[in-house]
Image (cartoon, rainbow, N blue to C red; front, side):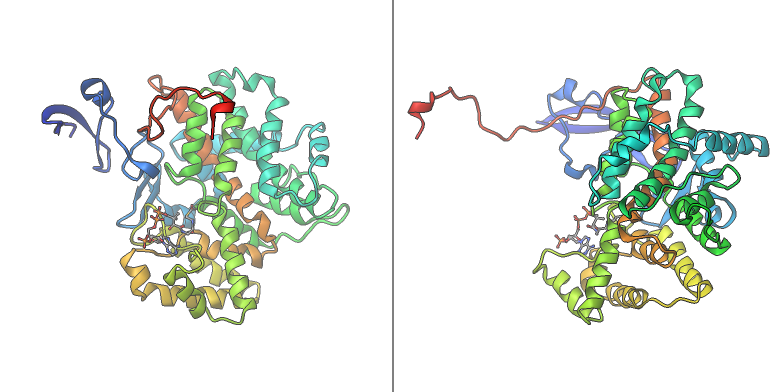
Length: 428
Ligand code: ACO
């Protein structure tokens, strides 16, 4: 039930409305705080700040709950596909067969990049990180669709499908470019995830084998990453969208935010950490001591989460999938053994227990991706492909909200107070 709350500021009481979400979360609506009191709130890192109302994804970090549009992530992981889930996130309901066919058709119709885009790929040095290529190329793609800039509502389904479809083509092309391999064009007969694997691993005249267990594992990784409410990259997308920048520009900014090792870049960082531990012949104990002593400013990558303080439900599903994929592919991986050892120690260690640090989605996803032949520097790119429907859904929510205003946080200024300019000759 919506109500009010009374705050005392500088001895004066003020009444503010509260807003209660459908899952019972209470927010104090401070929209009039500054005009009533002159004060603002200060919340670095936004741990206590709701930046929007959203009907897309619900997380209860204490209980380890994640739901897309009211559906539990474990149920979707078991019964749905990435593309069906993408539709659910963007349009709010599971699609009918006809809606799904139409959505899939739009994805196929828009999977090819404009030929002109090939020249842009040539401009990157071989050492370019695929995330740099991805964010630049998503923005570049917007130049080929001028009606994006002043997009009308009826254009949205086409632009959304184009972005979701082309991000996969761009990702595969950037991998091929980085490895000096010829680009492979998408095939209209293949489904979304199969097509990505085809563009990554086929050769002209020689299609790669699409093993169902690999397709399933990758589709699941995409699905588990598809949205995660107001994380750093999604908030970036919403902030850029709030200025009424176009969908591609907003998504390109999201890719940049995702790249950092404290966010989506953690999947690459986890693998690099495991490789380093393995190289040094450590079983994880020495590394964990370094983390706990905070000597080398190191963190156990893939552990901890701003919201999950119990467990990350995605990590549980991914860990199970990881064991399954390695068994199906008849592979063993010493890095998986190290990861399991690290997890076992950390889950019983006072340092991690007292800080409520548990494995997050990135802890095991890299091992699956490595097992299916994805190079480490592509891990975060795959996260971006998975997250695209969530960004599109959040972009749509901003655009559809008639009350939405440009995002413009305030600050508490801590710099010098007013002083007069000294000519150069008078400065010490
Ligand atoms: N390893 C060791 N210590 C950690 C870790 C970690 N992975 N994560 C947090 N801590 C410690 C901090 O040092 C701090 O300790 P202190 O109280 O002694 O100072 C305490 O736990 C709280 O940490 P914060 O940084 O305040 O937590 P915050 O909520 O801001 O950060 C984050 C969350 C960024 C995910 C953090 O846990 C982290 O860096 N994890 C490793 C990177 C990672 O896996 N990121 C992926 C997150 S999931 C995603 O984005 C898809």
